[in-house]
Image 1 (cartoon, helix red, strand yellow):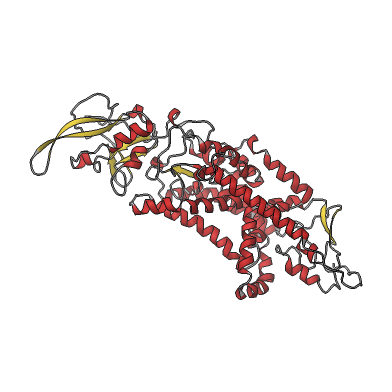
Image 2 (cartoon, one colour):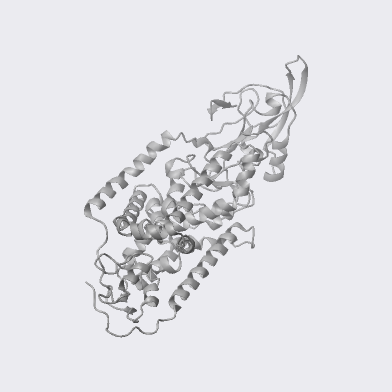
Length: 539
């Protein structure tokens, strides 16, 4: 129901002070977000890794999903309660005044709105797109229900995680190009992973052509969660409906970036982000924000849609497990950050795929997973030794982790990440008799130990000549799995020495293929080995 506007001459329009205050808030929090991200990397403005994790600890959606998936109370996520408390008091202010992705979309809208195509689509698609308002509640239900059933998909839909991973991908683009130029075997995974991350962010920005803040209006589950809570805020717009006779009433609905007014002119408080544009726009100064008794409106979600969503959400974890088999994930190469338990499910439940550890890793060893960890582990961090090694004195990934999925203070020198295994079909001293000691030197320089030793062997070459060659062996009990040997291996493509998970690796040694590798000898046994990778045997 609309109300009549006062019959009076339009007053002098207000200066758009609230609009500028909001913009100042958005810019300020965007700068804080950027500074915290740069502090996480330590590459530009010094170090401050521990502070950076606060970015995601104020995120209620990430906190709820992490606790539901891990079935534990994560007290480290207590700052999310501040966000929830302010939402109860002020409404869905976080989306309009703080969220860095919302700010990014507003800046994008400033440019794309000048296109004639954008103006045309905004007019024609406004009414049809209102049918998609329930999509954000559907994604919220799917996210929470999947977490209850042990599958965390928050990395796909959390706005701050999407933005941070996009930023990290852009910053690491140089490293990806370097990996490709040097022919590293896993550059394809890095390239595809980066392309997926950037494509998701690009699609969100491109959707601004269809409607202002398309993501926030129709898809964002964090906005849906805050909107449900903000419906009970005592800070409400007065009047709560569009004025009936005011010539500018329709303009209030047109300028609303969230399309928060329904077909009946009623303000939907779960959609309003308190942008204050209507307050500054009103020529009669009728619009106010007052402390009133909240009157929550209904939610744009039918019972049928809700039941269908619950059914689909219950099936998502099962589909993910089937997908793990179909994608051909190779668990033997699934290396996690140092200190993470061998129980990958426990880590995946706590990890919110925020990308902070990937941003902070000084060597670029941590990369976002695609199929390597199965569908349930997409975007979770994996150690990729071919790209970079794990420094044995570095703990930044644990310091920036907001949910403590990566244990804090676990030095790589104190834990076992994996075990290195030599592929004797590719290793130069083993396959061709050419001398090479790069893996040995890398192990001594980086890991400060001699986990790789040499043994003298006599080899008959194809021309019949017998030569003496130094062949490398891995001392199983000395290897930490830091990956320096794999990073420095001079072969193009797949390294001749690869780090495997500890529970998949086997001892290497002369004669039987087992043993510690200590001492000197000339045995040349082939070893039993265990088939890994693409039909090749690590012996």
